[in-house]
Length: 577
Image (cartoon, rainbow, N blue to C red; front, side, top):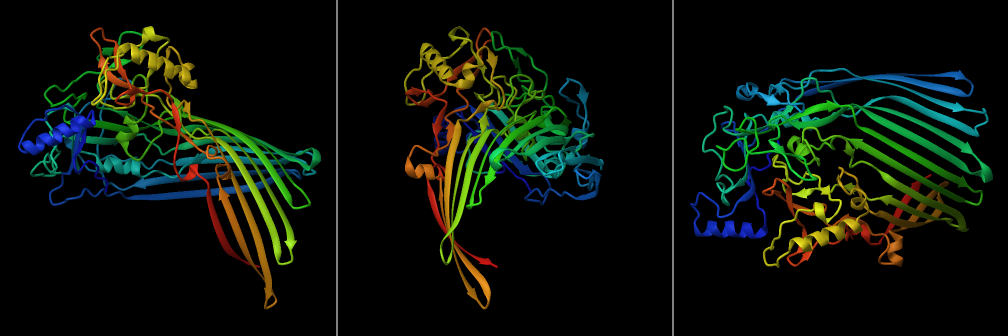
């Protein structure tokens, strides 16, 4: 069961607007209009008579077969070949909405298309061949080259299919209104739900659909590595891994009409207009009673690669040390989540939301290195002592710079990537006064945004261009851990029994200096507030403010959480010998 918005969801443009609307309800509980315009209102209800909660019946049988063989081409060359075949078979548990099945929708290329709400993916065979090798080059275990290539099938995300069973206009009804006054705040969660339901298509609903030829994700992955014993007993490793989508995923809203025009000026992205004026609020839809029709489809443009290098050595005196570095990058069309509409709406873009292009994935690893050392020695008769140290530096994730609000009018909020102006002449700010604050003039906002761009390494490199999805990497995080172990053993009944005391100091650097070992976060990755278009058709916006009297100044700030401070833990375990 998935039932979001069943309590009603009210999204306001400011906290002050909410107070105004809520207080107006106290004055007049029977009102039919709000004194303020809501950014968005949503409500969902169960549409089957006698069923208070919309249960989504999903049946699937999953079969897999794998065969593998290993053979030697020579004494020092070994191959492993395998073939896997998987097939998910879905039961016919989808709901038929004859009304939606008769509607004409629009694909990402502008072509007319129709879908059947009850049609789940076919039982497509997913073939996954692969081949690997291991070569001892000089047949003396000093130089080893290993690698392989193959197609790999991930575990199917069945929630993608249950979205379709839940969002078809029959199981549930769904209403969404943007920029509306016709849904004033009401604490009764049932205030805007229909009094009676019949099981026929609801008056309004959203759709989650699956392309008829959809296949679950597969990637083609290849890797090559070399292990080599070099000077002074060091073992060195270098490895490169590359992956490409065979069946990647992406989403379109097939109920989104084409753009009505474009902005003028340097930011000339497409604009969308209200196509359902008879429906309260701003509605950008082909079929006005369908709030969205998000379709799950395949693409094969996603790629990922990772390069890694390592040195390690073990010493006879009980010391072991290792150092490694890696860098990874991943690009795709969308980082798909569990909710169809959320995956489409939450995907930043600078043009057509149904054709967002390839961006940097949230799974892109970036830079990472670590140093580790372990030393063990028996100082006492009753057991050995161990000390280990681990130091790591890594990228702490990535994000995108987008507008706060819906700049292009397509109905998707907070997903329009910003345009980075070349200079102040390309900026188009609107003066404003926040609630309880002071006036922020156009000139003041221009100066603040110019300074914000200059202090941001990424934005200053994108002058005159759109920001890219996922391209803003957070500052590196450095962390050190220290562990001390002490074994205590005794012989009982002729058997060796060992207790081990272990002391871990996590984020050891923060114990030494309060400013070490802390992560960073983006203060506000939506530095501009969308205001639509001005009288000349140019993109209009405001600079985000930190508080009613101060504009945004910096990109990042330190985080304050359990991982940002040192922690100490003491453990005791018994070792069976």
